[in-house]
Structure formats: C-alpha cells, structure tokens
Length: 413
Image 1 (tube, rainbow, N blue to C red):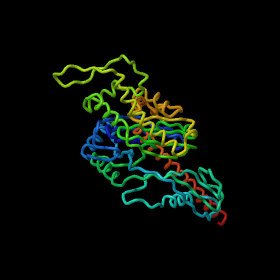
Image 2: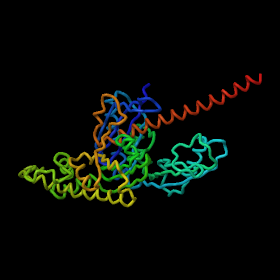
Image 3: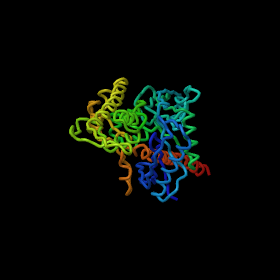
Image 4: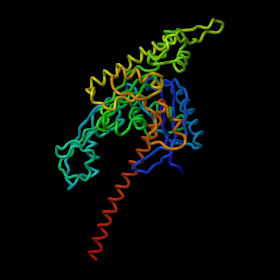
C-alpha cells in the first residue's frame, strides 16, 4: 500500500485537490511526489465560511475525484485548509519547573500544554500551537531544549484559533463527499510549505495570499511564524468592479479579468482595444484595454496598500530582507509583481509550488492557485515525518533503558 496524502483547498470560487506520495529521506528531508491534481468551480464558501453545504460537497467530490483519476488511487482522508476572518492569532507564554537532571520531551510537552491553556470564546477552538522560542533558566533563543540542563523551562507559543461552527460545517460537507478530515491547517501556513524557502523564513518574509474573497498576510522572521492577519477584500471584489465599470455580468467580468486583465496599468498599450461580451442581438462593444487595467489596478492597489499598512503597524517595515511572496489565485494576474513592488517598496516575487516536490507531474501544480493545496500535502508529509522522528526517539529511549536493565541483570547474576 502506497503512503498517500491529499491536500484540499476549498475556496470561494474554486476547490483544488492535490494527491501526493510520501517520498524523500524520512524524517530528515521529506518530499512530495505529485500523483494527481483536481480542480472544480464552487460557490458554496464565502470568506472561508460554508454557505451552501450541498454546493461545497459537490465541488469536493469533483475536485478529489479528478485528482484520484489522475493518480490512479483512491484516498480516504484529506488535509483541509482553513482561512478567513474567523481565524485569529495570539502569543501565549508558559513556564514549568524541571525536576529531572536534564530536560526531557515530557517537560517540553508539559510547558506547551501550560501555554495553550488560554480562555477561548464559546465558538472558538485551537487550530495550531506553534512554539516561538524556549527559555531555559532565563536564557532565550533556544529552539530545542531537550537534553539541556536547567531548573526552569519557559516557552512562547503562537496560538491560532478558528470558529468551531465553521470547522464543523466544513467537516460535514467533506464527510458527505465520502472523505474524512485528517486535519485542518491554516492556509497561509500550508502555502508557506510550498512557496517560502528556509532562508526566507530566517531572514524575514511576508507571505501575501491573494484569494477570491479575502487576502491573508503571514509574517515569518527568525524561522518562526510571527504574525497573521486577514483582509476581507481580494479577487472577487476586482471582478465586481469590472462588472460595474464595464456593464457586464459577473461571469463575463471574471472571463475578461482572466483573459485580458493586467494589474499594473503602465504595462498596457494605451491604444489597444478589447471586445466586450454583448447580449444576443446587440452590436459588439469595444473598450480600451487600459480602462480594464485601471479598474484592476485601483482595487488591487487598495488591497495591497492595506497589507502594507498592516506590516507597518506591527513593526516589520525594514525587517523583511526577503521581501514579499505573493500567492493565491489572484496572484496569477499579469503585472501583479510590478504593482506590489510599487506598493511595498521591497523585493517581491511570485510564490509558485516547487520546493520539496518530485515526480513527473510537478508542472501540474506550478501555479499560485495550487500553492495552498500543494502546501497542505507537504504539511501532511512533514507531520508524518515528525511522527516518525518521535517514534524513533522513543525507540532509542526504550532500547537505552532495556540495555541498562540487561547490563544490570548480567552484573547481578
């Protein structure tokens, strides 16, 4: 039986599924061998919240079934992305006393449990508990305290929470599609596995996920997840602006955006014209492409400007040498990198899945729209590798104890 994982990104306008096989050298350097990719249109989710369970279920069935046909294998469980304005993040400290001669994994687990013991709202649950740094006897900046000597162990953790009802409704839609939820994962965190390098995490980088109904910001610095923020405007609002400005339907506006859209107006030939969709029996209409570009430019300048102000508000201006990585479906618009460079005043690149991937189907996911689904598969594989490493560590500990017992018995008898 092959070791398979499936990442499922249920968005506002599309559902993406990526099936991968666990590859690489576990647990040191896990990789994902891409086997299947599926995509389906949907309208059942808005800003990360399920609005129509039947429609969401249909899109999950179509996307995962398409990925299964390509892979030639069936999957039972899926790792699901979570995003939206219902997701929040806080930093929480924990401290415990160490009584053994050296710090053990049990002490680390205990101090993290103390840090996660926070009071949550009635509809909130913890999504992730991410250690920022450990402190041993007031010495800061420790990433792994196991094996060290000390009497006081502290930790600062990055807690992300989600709405319980949102998770329950999404889980219900997926289970109705015939799959179980192996785990929920914060979408910007998942996307970072596919698009952000270890060097960028260390130097300092902002991952900006431009979706359909919301924009997510995740800041990484010193290899840690430092900040999370969501803005309720993104690609769908661009589409609405086009529909209103050019007097076309939402569907036609989306097609115009995908076919002729440019996010940075200076890149457009001011004399170029495009044909607009017209109702049956009416004369064709033409408009300067520059007008379409101006509509897109203005809205995305507003969206990226809000992100830039958030980066400034939390004090990371000048502290992100690796700049900004753009991902998500809206990041596929031509000229988005040029516009972002103007807005942020720092290096900007497009985040495309590629790192830690193997196989002959890598090109099937080399688009920003597949960043989250691919990252979910990579996250699942890293969780598997982490479990393998912990099992190995436990096995070493057991062998060490049994070896001591054997020596004691030999000496005694």
